[in-house]
Structures are given as C-alpha cells and as structure tokens.
Length: 153
Length: 394
Image (cartoon, rainbow over all chains, first blue to last red; front, side, top):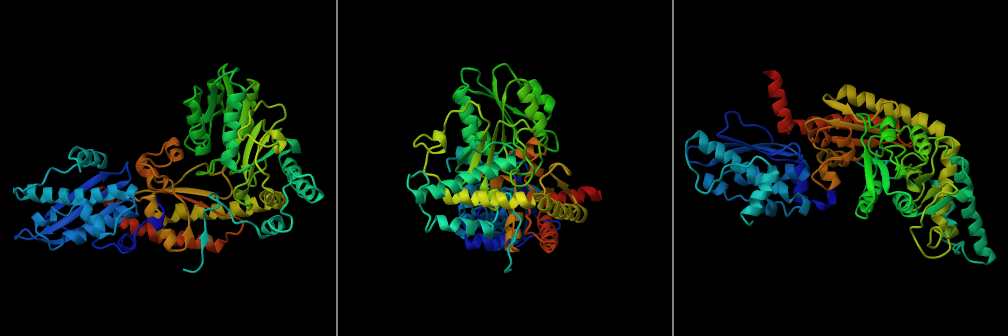
C-alpha cells in the first residue's frame, strides 16, 4: 500500500524529481481539486497562447508520493498540446505514462485529470469560450469517484 | 546513503546479539519438543519454564500465571474473546478506548457482531483516558475493561493503576495491552490492579512471533487455541522453544538495565522533540510531553502529507512511520490522532520517530537536519502552504 516497492520506477522518478513544480503568475487558467480531509490537493497552472496551445504548465500538490508523481506527469503530458488535445489527457493516459499505479492510488490519477480539466475550465471562463466536451470541475475527490461511477468509467 | 538510521523501534526492534546466541542451540542440537517425555526434551522444557520465572519476577506475579502465545495480537484476542465467552452468563458489555491497537479494536468489532456491547472511551487532547469516564461507563453487565498501557502511536502512558482500581471496585476484570510498555516501563500487576496483560517479545529486542498473556489465578477465561495439552491445556500448539528462550533472554537483558535505558532514551527523545519544535515552524507534538514512552516522539507538520515525508526520509536512510491515510491503507488518517481531536488535514501530516538505546545523538541530529530540508521542500510544493502564506501576507 504505502510500500515504496509498489511504485514503478517512473513514479519514484517523478516523485523524487518532480517536473514543473511551482506557480505561473497571471496564468491563463488555474484549477484546484481534491480536499485536505482526504489528504490530496492538486493545483494546476496553465499558460495558454493565442493559438490555444499550452505553452507551460506548473503544479503544486499536497499529497502522497503518487499524488505528486501524477501531478508531475500530467503537467508534462499537457505541455505543447492544444487545449482540445489537453482535454484528452485522461487518468488512464497519466497512469500509463507512469507505468501504472498501485490499485489504492488510482484515485490520484483521477485527481490529475480533474486538475487539468479545472484549469482548462478556468481558462475557458476567463476568455469566455467553450471547449467542446469540457465539463465543470468537481472539487472533491469523493465526488470525482462518484462522477466516474455515474458516467460508467 | 550507506548508513541506516532506524527510528521505528515501536514497529519492531533488533534482536539483541545475546538473544540470538541464546536461541541458536534450540534450532540445532537442542531441537527437541519440550512436551516429549525423554530427558533431552526435558532439558528444553526446564529452560522454557525458567522463562516464566523470569517474567513473573518482572511483573510481580507467579510463573503459572504466564502463558506463552504467538505475540501481542494473539494475547489481546485471547484475553478479550476468552473473557467474553467465559463470562457470557454474567454480562455482555466490554469497555475499551478509542485509541487501542487494532488487535483490540477489531476483536471488539468482531464480538459486536456476536451480541457483545462495546463502549469506547474517548481520550483527552494528550491521549489520556479519564478515570471518571471509566467509572461512569461501567454497568451491571460489564465484564471487562481493556485499556492499553501505553499508546503505540503517540506514546502516552495511561493511568493504569487508577483505571484498574476502578474496574476492580465494580468487580470487573481489567486487561491491559502492554505490548509497547512491557520491557520499557516498570509494571507490577498487583499494585496496578491488572488481571490480564498482553506482551510481545519483538518490541524489546526479542524475536518475532512470540509473546505471552499474564492471567491472574482464578480469572475466568475460555481458551482460544484448542488442541494439545501445552500451557496447562490453555493454549495448544507445539511450544515455540527457541522463541520463548529468546523472549526470556531479552527480558533478562532489559530487566538488568531498564532504568538506565529509559533515562538515556528520554534524554535523546527530549533533544529530538525540542529541536523539531524549535526549528520547524507549524509543528505540533502529539501525546503527553511527560507521561510518554521514553522512546517515542510523534509530530504533525502542517501543510504536508505523511507518505511523501516517509519516502523522502527513506531516501535519506531514515526509517520512520506515519499515521497518514496513505500509510493506513484507508481514506482516514490514524484513529489515534483523530481521537485526540486533530482535524483530518493535520493528522495526514504525522510522523512517528521511535528510538532505542542504540540510537545516538548523531542519529537524532542527522534526522532533524534531514527533516528540516524535506519539510521545506514539501511545503514548497504544497498548495495549502501557498494559500497560508498568501493569506498571512494580506
């Protein structure tokens, strides 16, 4: 469960040397998901250019090793992608890129996906645009899980 | 990092070299089953019987009141299920506390499914059970009070003698899970009004998989493990001779130097606590500052999560433990930290460091220095800390 040995080398790498930690001043979009009660909070900052391409992504995360690793990987995956492509960075994509997660940590990858969506939602609202297929963010991991159960994923 | 700094002695301890040496012959030349009739086996039986004398000397009881088990969890299970069964005609109510080890709590939950009623006493902010609250919880149908001697997470030492006295004044049996205490603090079962006591060898430099239950003579207790006639027919199963002999040696060793060890550990523990509280901001000590195990320090660091902390400590050669949800395998952080009134978000950032007489001041200082760097790094990544700092600046 909490055993380091249950984490893949990639997870340990992204936890030990997380990419893109920090904040972006005047970010195009910021999203915060999760809650402190459950022990995971992720905040993602996106810098998006006029062509709707993610120029930069940063994160701050309060949480376990997997929460930090999934945040790091999620920022890596969205960088250079268009807004529409970034929306397709799912929890599965984050997990696959990390060579998997222990079953009890799968919710961390859901949180990473939600963080991307929340930041994109913020960007869309600020710019008064609609991103096709983007749903309003859910600010609680429990609700997120219910949400996924509801949508049958 | 070649060196391993072991700060998790509440999880288990190193088998003392003298203990290992005492055990080895019983895997080799003296492999006989102590229950057999021939002389060679008799010598082993004498040796294991001698261990009961050693323990009896430490607890102030009689050797025939000591029953060997496979460890602390078995002893707790036996005491609670055994009393519940033996006294089912007298009553069906057990009183325990909110901060017990799972070996007690889950045993009680099991009994609840079989019609037993369980009261879990709350504790105060330092983890103490209030004697008055025990008094008020006792009912005519109460058959057992079970309160741990010292808490495994926060190290608080409970007022056992007082609690035992209250139980006895109502004619109720008193059990204590002394797994963290036996081998570390003086225990006298007479003066402390204890009827049943659980202990485990690996918590005091003995081997894993062996412990004992003290059962006061005349205590009504059903058997847990049925089978052969070992342990006076009370606990079946081939006698774990080497383990018991290791337990005995470990008990002899601590009995000879308990005071010295405790004062050495307490001084180091206090240095650890003082440095952490002074040098790392937004930190709290969990448990009582005075009435706590000499080897235990437990902290909460705000804005960070325990598992991340443990992994980074591990990468720096430091072994420790945490009560965060991620380390408990559930969504909730430690039940002990919640019971002392900490909110979830604070409890997630807990760290337990438990030292031993082998821990040096250098180990403690290296741990604090490393901890400072790690916490700064994790706070630098934490959105909670970011918000906290921004709100403070406003």
